Length: 179
Image (tube, one colour):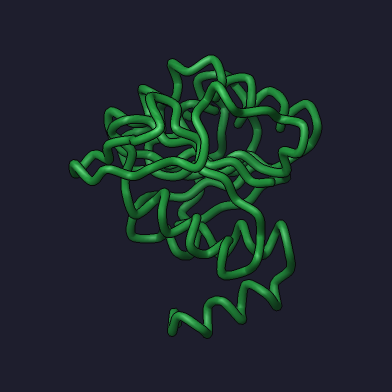
């Protein structure tokens, strides 16, 4: 199961585009409301999460997805459940995916040290030890990072290609006319 964490102030497109791409690819993804069952995006769009943080268990975790947005990123970083999920993913060699400001959560913990990574411009200093890429979406080992909302579909498709295969990602890309 892929778990995408939502905290008040998340970037709508970065979260929901990923959910949409994975569901089109028939990859199980569950949204986790960190701040409540209904989570308010950074643009005041309420989204109902599949489960709350209290209901989360990492037993079947295959990947963690952290959307950016402000103050969503800060709210994710404050969450012990999010930190535990990231720890579980790292310890068990599962994917950790973060977009926009959210790679800063990984950088603050030194998880990107020596890794190629990217984030929203202006957050590079928070990616402690990372090699900052010029790409919009970057995969290095089990870490997938992306710049921001404008590449959220590509970020989602990269996750699909890693959790399924490139052929499935291309089929989804073709089905949504994304070229």
